[in-house]
Amino acid sequence: MKMRQFKCKQCGHEWDEKFGSGRPEKCPQCGSTGFFRTDSGPRNVGCRRASANKKANKSSDKDN
Image (tube, rainbow, N blue to C red; front, side):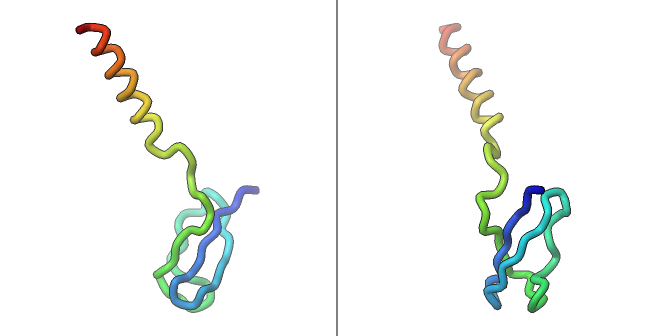
C-alpha cells in the first residue's frame, strides 16, 4: 500500500499516512498543526493543463 510521509516542524516527529486517508489534522506526537510532506507528493500535478496549453498554442500557430 502506498504511503505519504510527514514531518512535524515543531518536534521533528516523522510518520506515514495511507494515500486516500485525507490530510492529517495534527502531529500524532505533539499535536502541532505545523507539519509538511517529506515524500515527493503527487506527480504530474498541473501537467495536464500545461500540455493542453502547448497543444492550443501549436494549433493557433498553424492557423497563422
